[in-house]
Amino acid sequence: MLEHIAKTPDRMDAVHESAGLDSALWRIYNRPKRPEPWSIGGNLPWDDPDFSRRMLDQHLDESHGAASRQAAERGIVLEWLWDRLELAPGSRLLDVTCGPGLYAVELARRGVYVTGVDFAPAAIEYAEELATREGVAERCRFLLQDVREVALAPASFNAALLLYGQFAVFTRGDAQKLLTTVAEALGPGGRLIVELLDLEAIDKSDRTWWCTGDSGLWGDTPFLHLGERQWHPEDNISVERFCTVHLETGAMDQIYLCDQGYEVAEMSAMMERAGFDRVDVYPGWDGLPLHDAGMYVTYVAQKS
Image (cartoon, rainbow, N blue to C red; front, side):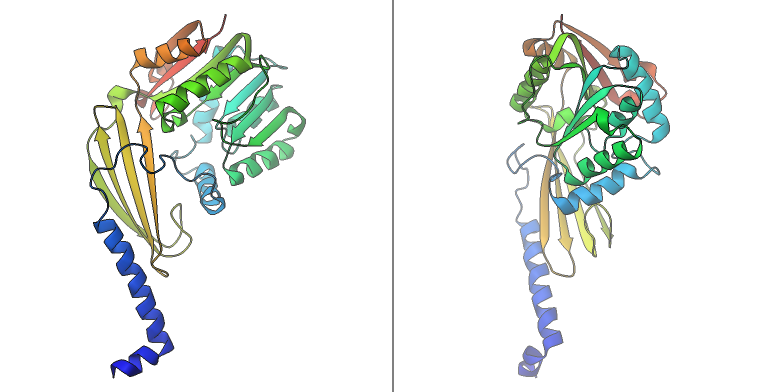
């Protein structure tokens, strides 16, 4: 009977799938119980073409604001950015981690010349298509590149953006280097706006969760997604571990996401070390009517 089962193709497939699932589950069971920050990467795989495509769907989904703010709130933020950055037609702006260009293209519609940098291929492709569709392609330049490695001409911009907490996914060393790169790319009087989670508002509890699905951010075929989050108080950083088991093959993806928290004084000091002479701090997005405004602190750094 066992010999017959072993020679039956359908049963062989089932045995192989079971072996794959067994391996994935044992990997989860034997995982480090408390991973160190940055020990296995530390950011989502934005540059993976499939993940990038699925993340783009989340950016464009107006039913939630998990990846990008919904259109109405983006409009509110854009007005605030326009005023605080003292933008005008002809201004030159650098959009760091620009995603699908939802801010960049709107600013280009107002006459701003925008350079957006991101290493998610689907997002950059969409940003270019959006700029063309809106008739502002001549005022938009999008670079498919890691923002930590981008080369920018000195004093070539009037203003810069780094929105929606993306600054937190870099190590402190990379974050300081990035601030310096941006500062050097800004001319006299140039301003940078950085949006970061308020350290006091960050959920510092350890927790776990799971879900299943057959499409979405974590896969295009049936999957089991397991997640856990741990807070490291000594470094003010959370480490999230995402394990996604693809049920048809037994393959498993494992991603670590590190979110670095900053005290206001530390962040302000980093901006000053980068070359900014003045840093204004706006807790709660300066009172803007955003659904999550209280979760964020917005920094406006200016060069002399």
